[in-house]
Image (tube, rainbow, N blue to C red; front, top):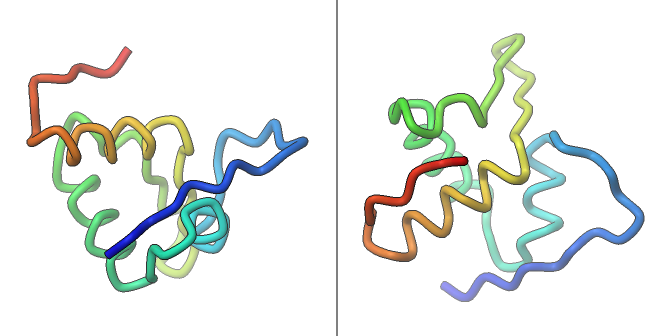
Length: 82
């Protein structure tokens, strides 16, 4: 799978929904995103980056999601969030 990061210009948003993440990461599909969000929710290091106010609504913190991807990319190293 090839995923390309596409920064959103003129955006000061810190949180977004699944569509916002999918638009930032070209090539990422919804199935993979859902698996990664489940993985984030299950890990105490990353669970603060995913909010579910209702069962249909989800908000993802862009910065924490970027850190999570770095963590996954580098073999689950001992990266600690700031």
